[in-house]
Image 1 (cartoon, rainbow, N blue to C red):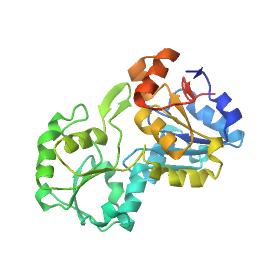
Image 2 (cartoon, rainbow, N blue to C red):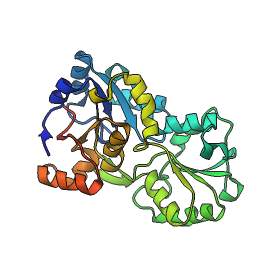
Image 3 (cartoon, rainbow, N blue to C red):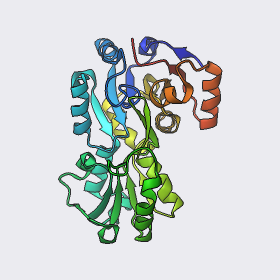
Amino acid sequence: MNILESVAPLADSHDGFVLDIWGVLHDGATPYPGVPEALRELRARGKRIVLLSNAPRRSWFVAKSLTAMGIESSLYDGIVTSGEVAWTLLRDRRHPWFSRLGSRAFHIGPERDLSVIEELPITLATSPAEADFLLNTGPEPERGPQSVEPYRALLAECAAAKLPMLCTNPDRAVMVSGQRLICAGALADVYLEQGGDVLEIGKPDAMVYETVLSTLALPPAKIVAIGDTPHTDLLGAANAGIDAVWALTGLALNHFGPNPSPEALAAEAVREGVAPIAALRSLRW
């Protein structure tokens, strides 16, 4: 697999960029070196950029966080998050799975993720027995983000109450300042093992790319997605019919180390069932 040292060659062949946020733009605390500069160079060349994230929060919340990191809104055309898509589906209730949900949610996740139900006629239940569905946005401060084990008993209680689980972040793990932490998708795996009903919103589902492709308004052949995770970013790009490039930051850096061989990357891509057109050392110019 060809490893690119810069995003510049992709600017020669593509006009639209779909960028993962966590693991490509930043490490959960600060942007990776060269990212703001690379975005400015792409914008200066007239490239269209949409940020696509499995963040379980509304797009406005993520935009605010990026601005605080020094990634201004002028550096991209839009943000689509799994939380925003979930919010829209909860609002409209046209999707068959959502149409049968009630209005009482039992929430597993940090309070900051509750933007996913803001301004909606949904109330929070204090126990699974009082709820109509389970809203899973990820690990909580009290139980911690290191392991799924502290969540098993609570998830079993939810499964016994036959609560359908809405998982607003299909990621299984994320890197935060060099530490690997679990995400909502890891809790969804446990719930499935317990016999629970789970719907995951986010990459790699092609549905979350509809707004992205509409915003870019470009032929699919001129669009490339860049992400660090095969089973969400790279597979999602394939599902949407666009090229994918494997960023060797974030989870890829944790998995392979700083200098993976092209052969190791190619073998892992085969195991994951994806076919990125190249790998990218990091998003820099």
